[in-house]
Length: 107
Image (cartoon, rainbow, N blue to C red; front, side, top):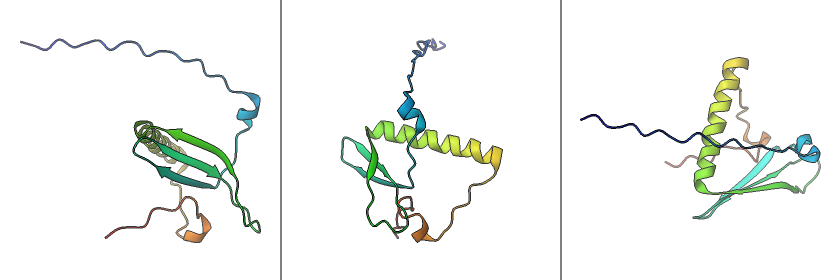
């Protein structure tokens, strides 16, 4: 007997409002990521030459499931970007991007 395929409900349309201040965006060249069993916290900041202090400009708190969905969405969008514009080359000089370095490799 063939299984009956369940129809999934139509996805809900969401009207997203983008305020003038938010549309300007916030530049960040450093992110600090921490987590607990219930959430991921991403603090976006920027470091500037000659300024020894960095201020957090935005904090995003999300569930682990939403953090993983964000990771997948970023992978997908980076892949599309690279297909259109070419590979994004990362400078392996770790001091250049202290907030976005890869975590240390564990052997």
